[in-house]
Image (cartoon, rainbow, N blue to C red; front, side, top):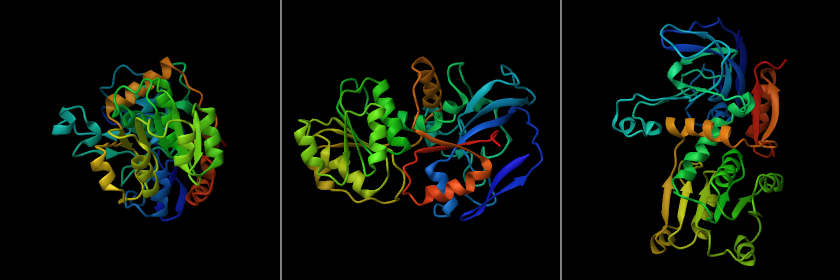
Length: 342
């Protein structure tokens, strides 16, 4: 079978590997779709240290069960699934509180040396499986992971019904946050980004106001009558300018949620945070409960992800797509690799 193996910075190759057999407690997945995450691109560039070659990336994915290991019950060959890609120990203090995302011993499929989904078939613990309901396609199944990242972030704000929200960044996570906010009945939503193409996509998916970051954001918000009314500001990039935007434009005693995880250090106006009593929450991926709740939510309230899925490609074009995405100038949002596309 084929595996897309990362051998070092900007070096991915398709290798042949033997078909794995599931161990006790595991199932084998025939991979359908795998999303290329921004963290995968950074790993491909060799700048994070979180992809140790040779290894196989891919933690956003869906597929169907192709084999079942000893002791696994409740599943059948052919069942469509997505997989919660985080493995937690279940024993540390964080796991005992349900905070599996903060597990002291956590491992994420497709990172470090733990092989992920960019291969025709691979084995996963059965306890990490999430069944896909009939009305949730395999394509949408591969989006559950980034959707869950945004979902957990927004949960930090509590009840957002009717609240005015600003989202800084209209990449995958920012647009997913927009969809989560709409599903949870937020009020007016503002989206800020430097790309007019991404802002147009944000309008299609429910943004009331879009602002190019090169504009005078203060003036646009003032003209819209909401300059001092933004209850929640969401950072979905992970760099200083957007982090500062959340501080600058949230109202006094407002809530800020930082989901972006890019630059290891950002610089913001701490005095503004202190003197206006702002609340800032960092948000890291999702818990097991969050992930499963997202499958349920998207089954109960199906969503249109057109445009957010920018392109579907065969695995043979993955290296080319990583190269394009690494330049950052593309308007593409989420590229899915169809492991069955020839």
